[in-house]
Amino acid sequence: MISEQMIKRIPASNSSIFTGPGTNSYLIGKDDLTLVDPGPKIKKHLENLEKLAEGKIKRILVTHTHRDHSPGAKVLGERLGVPLMGRLLKKDDSLQDKTFQPDQVLSHGDLIKTNEYTIEVVHTPGHASNHLCYLVQEEETMLTGDHIMNGSTVVIAPPDGDMQDYLDSLELLREYQFSRIGPGHGDFLNNPMEAVNWIIDHRIGRENKVLEKLSLISPATIEALVKEVYDDVDKNLHPIALWSLEAHLLKLKNDGRALFDSSDNTWVIKP
Ligand SMILES: [Zn+2]
Image 1 (cartoon, rainbow, N blue to C red):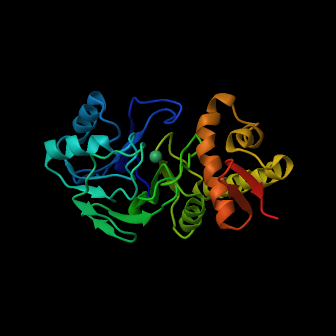
Image 2: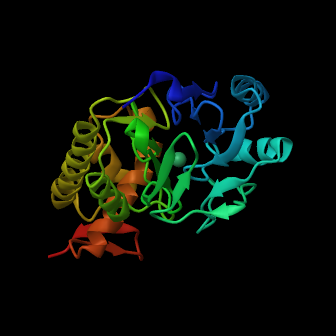
């Protein structure tokens, strides 16, 4: 049963085009607190988390190591003397927070048990290869980090981001029982399976559009293609959409449905 006070959502003040209303930190529990995603190193936000926790934080979990989610972990972990948990960076890229070093590396299926609640670890690569979701079992709540956001579209940025992994990780969530989602950005979602299914449909729809547009204008550079495939999206967002488009194209290449010509950086439909 969900009790409102068991999981608190505390957004950081880092709203932007990438982060929507800001990165959500979560405090779980009453006396034995788990902090999930301390967010960026914003002094006021970290102080606010400490104040709300009243000295009861026992461990810090991160969903993944993008710079809007994990940099607060090191400084807060050191100050509070509590362990950091999450996964290591698999591939280095400019989006990663290199300061995060877990004291305990989590694996899929791990259980973090306290007297108040149990957190089940769900490995969900795709948005980032080291991405984890956390199911707070008693609260029927899946904390999804950037695997599922509320109000903004998840960016899949290769090489660490992978579209096939992302779709597989969405399918994986269908195997779990939960009645709400605590996303990494935006408010709680109370219709979890509807949200999961919508994202899967949206991604498959986008992939079909990539194939359709590519068949019309190929050979095409990714820069030419983004204007066609994302003609429903604000042009200012096209530089960001390029990442997800590349992720779609790489998936289609792996599926044997598209080909890349490195001599002139163009994509074509595989005949
Ligand atoms: Zn992220």
